Length: 192
Image (cartoon, rainbow, N blue to C red; front, side, top):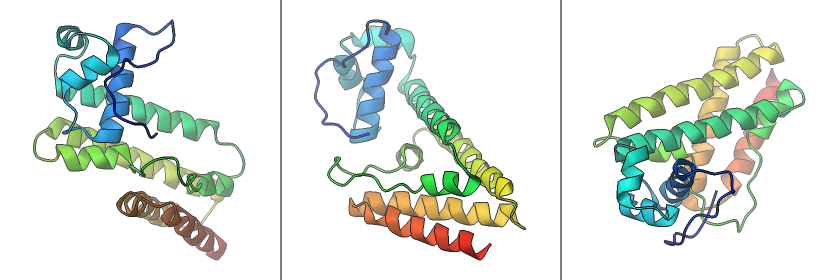
């Protein structure tokens, strides 16, 4: 999910309404430029609406951020649902190495939001906390499908490796942490 930040209107489907355009603009800008660095003026300009119209659909920036994160979480859930194969293949798919040169590595939108919102948007921090717990629980559930002796322990380790790969790839702006993390998970799975 990489893009260049400009103030041109967001390309949209003819079936998209104003709310969808605003949310699409926010998703792109919050992810690529950051929540704190992106003002509602820029989101409105990118969506091709007035600031007043933005506030009609999203009464506050906090509400807009929460809706952005809700949509991102829906994408994660949908991605997990379409993953097919064995439990091991689904775990391995979590560590697919992104293509190099696809733009700056921005990492996990939830982690980014937690860091940015820590002091100024406690509602967002709470939302991120719930999402991270749900993500870790989904990994534990896949480990249960594997039939391992302690799915909570293995799932917790894999979630930790995933979070570390996301953070390090962002910090280094590199794809190699994903490859290393995937190899480590394969080694853990081989030990089960």
